Length: 536
Image (tube, rainbow, N blue to C red):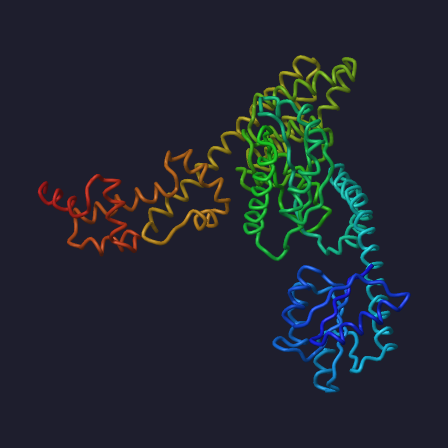
């Protein structure tokens, strides 16, 4: 049953409309009445009518004004105007406002019934359309996760996902090719073997999956995969026209929002969010996925890390497919030597069992890993001499003892991993050194952490972290210290006033400069000047 609101300043008109409706067998309404435009607006707010029969000319607020106000908060109502004024301008304005019928007084029973039947028909169609939409949404609520899961599986397994992509583009009405992978892992802390209590947390996360999925969907227009033990993988579209740094910062913002949301859902779980590079083609999505895993492996504690914020990280074409071997290569890149050796021991034992002690099969199975280790040395400029690799390979192939093969492999893994660790440390030092050189030359300029990070092509979070680790100061504290040291020199060795020195060292407010100076030095600039003059 639909709701009908009858509005007219004449009670006889209201009674006539009600009489016609009540005597019409095929029209059944819940009815309310109003005598003014103001009362009509107030009644509409509480009654929420489906159809409004309303007069144009009423004391105070007119019928057209009332229609305009009602449509602001109840756009679904249909309006039928009744009026004693056969005015073309009124009719034109009413039609522009979406009024479905315009009836002149005295009211014709047949015209009113026809108008109400038409309004009911429109409402019936709207309800049918809404039902179809709701049914479709309900079906999509079940189908969409399955499609998204299939898409993510194809990325993880490096399969061709053309079919899934076409389906998702059509269903979601999204046109994208550029994007990156964000992988979320969870556990209860980390040890040298990785995340702790993955199975227990996995059982827990299955129950929380809906909330986890919602947390991701609220913060990005991503394609969310299933829970895989203790991992959820998401493909996030991004703007191909923005530069790499902007893409990275935006991805980190999204990742941080998701991380904070997940921690608010369950603070007892440690979340590790790794983000791969943004690639212009979906064919490279698997690369971004592997990069996201490297980013997670790099983390010592929960948080968000982008692959481009890891020192020395570059593209490497990985042809080795086994998970354990991939894990070993990732740990070599990260310079985690002891974990590398442990991972190799696992591989070696498995191959000994698999090849039943056949030394030739063992050497062949390890040959790809030997090549992978060399590829790391070459890609990261640790050693790019092909002649050295040829000698190395010849030495490896000449070994005919299983224990000597094991020792040879471990020695090469240790050497490469240690070199990567040193290179990583040197790379951090290089970044901090560049930052200090820039600050020393430009301390008097308006420099922020964000500006400095962009200059160095590293995210603010990671720049702040490594700067503090290398110097012992936060970025702002170091810049402040540098400015105050320069100010002390100028005060002691020049005739410039405090305001001029304030400008010279990068401060715009003399009062603020004086407060900072006193906090660092222990005395005000004026007191320091007097002290310097007395000690000359």
